[in-house]
Amino acid sequence: MIEKLQKKLTLLLSSVSVFLLVFMLIFPFLFNRNGIYSDMRSTLASAINTPMYQDSVSGSYAVFQMMFDSDGNIIDTNGADFFLDSKIKQDLISDTLNKVNRNSSKFYSSINGGKLQYICEVKAPPDRFDDEERNKSKPYNLTGPPTLYRVAVTDFSTEIKNLNNLLVLLVLLFFVLSTVIILFSKYFVKKSIRPVSDAITSQRQFISDASHELKTPLTVIINNVGNIQKAISKNSIQTENMELLKKNINGIDEMSERMKHLTQDLLDLSRLENWQDRKEQMVKIVLSDITTKECLYFEPVFFENNKELDYNIEDNISVLGDANKIKDLISILLENAMKYSLSHTTLTLNKRKKGIVLSVENDVEKELSKEDTVNIFKRFYRLDESHSSSGYGLGLPIAKEIVLMHKGEIKVLSKNKKVCFDIYFHI
Image (tube, rainbow, N blue to C red; front, side):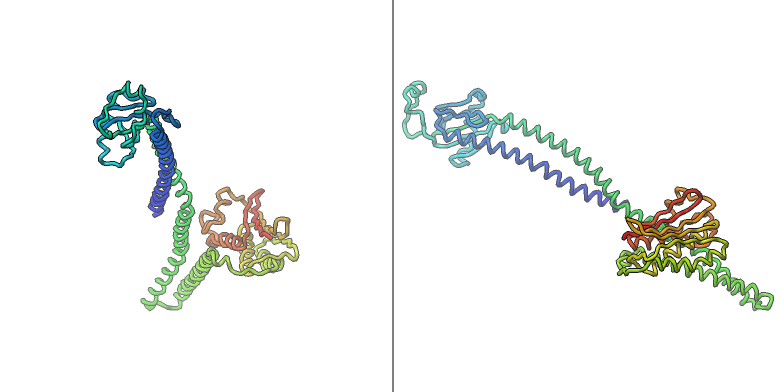
């Protein structure tokens, strides 16, 4: 499911990004192309609006002008004639005459694959016919008002080449950037959904661990119930069998109580992980008094187990929080210390510049490994691989969620055969 979601999100992000990339590349190309054509047309329009005997070179483009009649006879020329041979001139005249009937008296067009751009003006006056020498060099017999065509043309091949080179560059740039976008999208999506993937994996592991923990007491209950049912079916409930029946019933009761505590811990952990529960109204509580009461409660418990509990609690330390949850936090830490300490546990509570620090330190037979310090706050994680000790590995995860609920931090440090849990509350 996660893989399919990752592929769909990657495809969506890549598609949108590539679409934007295409737009970003096409826009400057079209803008540059239209700018060149606009400049060229402006040059041609300026040239054809200028008398032919004047200089027709304007702007960045060399312009050649030609005037001819409806029979294709050239009347007059001016400008940069070096790029037009006789064949091209005849092609220009033919193209113009073919388009006259389909266009207005003034139009833009092109020949030779767009390399030659020109503007045509129909019925242009023979502006050099008054020049006697011109008439002598190029006699022209007027039998009536002639239909003349004046054309201004420029060589556009260099611009076309530059535009083609720009297009190739943009296409290459598109493929390179598209590849980068796809790779980045894949990485970004993978990184973005990693918390979701980890949450699903954690949830699956949680269900698996919970099922494992519930399996043992359920098996004991089922077996004990089966023994009782067999005894009842055989009418063998006699004095000699009463002890066995009591043992089975006690086993059922013990396992039921165990399952009760487990399900309660699971419910507590679920509620603490619910963000809405963390937004509940906090009140000012005296952390010093709550901690002292919990230490006084656990002191005889430590004594019964031949262990010592020392505590050093600074007076009048207050925080915003939930009193019951803080009690649960301290109780979990002391229960954990009593379970794993060799002989001595120390609890300290004091105020520092950056906040309030609650520390629970106990001596241990074996220091925690790096794996233990990383996984110790994970659900159902227990230090002994055999899971032979009491508990379900939910105490410290619950403690961590309580700390997070109060916007604090919890850290564990193992050194010199001691384990210390430090809780930081921000003022």
